[in-house]
Length: 271
Image (cartoon, rainbow, N blue to C red):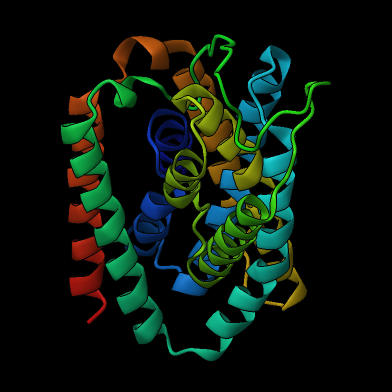
């Protein structure tokens, strides 16, 4: 069962615009009787490992926008420990309420995105992304081909990174559901570049959240984490093999409906 939960993390991370941790936290609470604090720590560790695996593949095809990725990740990594600290002070009932509100937002966004832009649902983090040459990058290009970071662009990236890091620390989510639309709204880049870049950001921010979980001395079942980790890597591997053939709007809607159902069940059973 734990390996299956891990596979769900890797599959959802690889196939959708939302991180697998939004599934992992409620599933862990339902099936292993772990607290939300421990479940979020385990989810962050598994997401970081699976995202790293996906990033290594994308790094070979030149699709990652490294400067925006590092700006987002650095800011997020600074705010993730703050989120973790705030989570340690808040009652679990309040965290559960906030998490379920976030899950509802993610599920609705996934559903509406699949309905309005069905073609974008075919571009996944685990795809064999082909390099493209967009007319403009996230920030204007210099004559030498380097990114020129202007103040509005930098400000947007820093604010977005801070929000992603805070939510990552609070609820144990990777933040992919915010990173992709943020990149697309700040630039005319294509969906393949946005999803490839987001995976690097998820890797670094989730790692920061996981490290802060350990630093705060919060509970962590290492044997449980190990099984979830193995499953998440397997799930990412599977999504890398089949993602480009099965990803579509219907699959994204199925994930959205499943996320909503699991989150509501967890909320009801813990109140």
